[in-house]
Amino acid sequence: MDTNIFKQFSDVPVTEIAPGFSGKIIHTPNNTINFIEVKAGSVVPRHQHIHHQCAFVIEGQFELTVNDVPQILDTNTFAVIPSNVFHSGRAITDCKLIDVFNPVRLDFIYK
Image 1 (tube, rainbow, N blue to C red):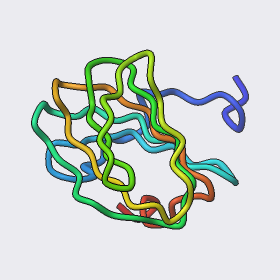
Image 2 (tube, helix red, strand yellow):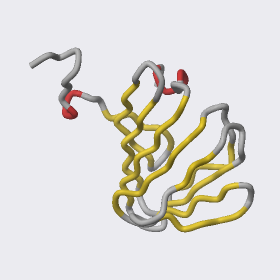
Image 3 (cartoon, rainbow, N blue to C red):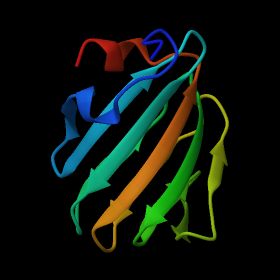
């Protein structure tokens, strides 16, 4: 197996991103991909960053607020958040999420 191309997901360490948010973070030259498990009731406060962000729910329900407008995300609804737009979130249920960021989240490399 070419380990420059093929990786083992089990080798990716779990990182606590915020209280109640734990993720497996993968970096490519252009993106950061975060596979997140979130405990129900956990909140990420209102923030913004330079990164373009795509947010997907794999399991559960997650309330994402963008520009002060809340929206429930589930397995049928995803979000494309432009750079520098304020957003926050709250897990309604236990959730599994995937967030994709561009450019690479350097702050996540050093977590």
